[in-house]
Image (tube, rainbow, N blue to C red; front, side):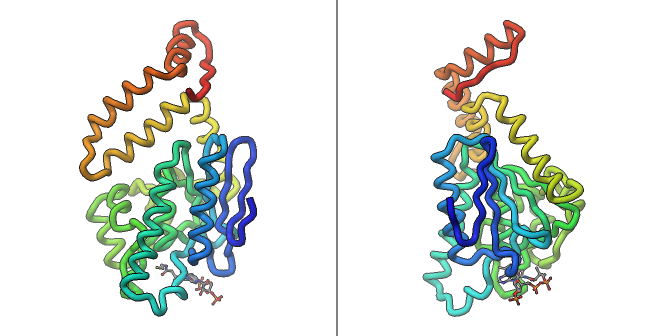
Length: 259
Ligand code: COA
């Protein structure tokens, strides 16, 4: 796939999407966010083990929504902008294969929100996370007020949103915002690939159901326990469950087909 502001690299079943506006610290302008949507919609059509999202260069993952596009927004188009971001980040969160953010530098505002829409986050030591929107007299608009609480709890989430402070990679690790901190970008990518390859040895339908059930916990009006009962039961229609159980009983490695 060819994009103006993204790099698409599909290798050995792992798709790496790189936000590629390094001169603007990979800020998400309208064009870029729509390209992210197109990339993930296309990714759904591919047979993938997993997806890595990262930023071009060493300085930034994504330094936020593109502030230069905020001038002249009115209530209606600001609402449309936020809604579009929400829809795209839900699309990412609901992917049936693991999506891992490799956070290599600033992950601010929409960048922090993009990383939080991914299933896991691996940071480099220079990563900085923050929701600095109040500096501009606005608030997070791509799900940040909701997802940051899910990862780090109300007290710390409120502190970050209210003060606009940034936290470093180690603090993010301690708070549970990131899964791992690796020495540099290439080892972080390697770690992400290892995790994706490990997950790819499991039952693909089961992996998709784990993601669905986890998302169900945070969905209004959905009883996650009921959701799990139904998801668990639905797996017994698959060939994979027979293969998984038989492989265990026959003391061999399972060969899942994803159906
Ligand atoms: N939107 C648009 N452009 C951005 C941007 C953003 N969110 N973040 C950085 N840029 C641009 C800068 O304007 C600059 O462009 P220029 O070279 O054409 O002037 C370029 O990226 C480099 O950024 P710069 O500010 O010079 O780098 P720095 O190292 O001095 O500071 C940051 C880095 C991340 C601290 C600073 O860029 C910043 O505060 N960015 C905004 C973060 C933010 O508020 N995000 C939430 C937006 S809702």
